[in-house]
Length: 283
Image: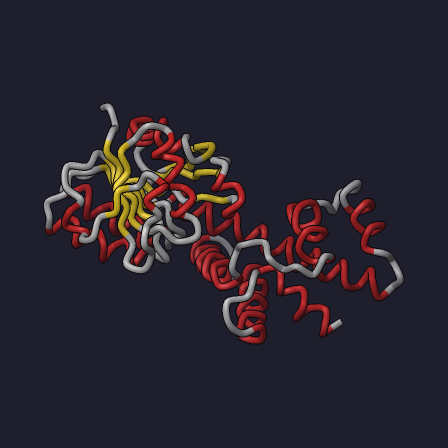
């Protein structure tokens, strides 16, 4: 199957930089967003009504959650869509599996392929794309997805969304531990530069110590581009999955609760690195 015409639904912070890469790769891209007006220079053709998404080879979703994806899919089904559907949002894998079963009855190919890397890596097509579903279907869209990043097959339907949530849980746990360690080290008289050199040269290094502390926390810019409410959502999904399938009283519960309390304390739309402000006050 030769993919030529692609629909992209959801052109917010991530979608607005992902979709233009598809245009640059030579595909015809039709965009739809209820809030965002598309920049014509991007090459994306704006669609004013979702019913206009006819005769497209693939439709990609980059929406706030899986329930919205399901609602939009219902609208597409009313229009008898036959497109391959790819949910690149951060959705609950249980919702994804439910939607997948519904679409299978209609003989519609459906994949979950959420991403990791944030806006900065989305702009340059270096996202990690975690694909779930039928592996043969992933191969059909591999070339298209590869325009936006590295594609890694995760497993059956819902696996992409499951590993995305679990990845963000592991990242969040490292974030909180790193913030605690930095604040405590400072209280002990250890300078941040020395802290980073030692931690990143030893076994404690992680994504937060290597990428976030210097750029966003020690600098006090707190502008990584990843909102705390999105981390709260993903870690909450991971916590629920872990409790259902793995452990009764997991660490994920403490991480999820701490992030939720931090979000409530910080107020409107904070960056996830601002959790350090909350933690620092309590040490």
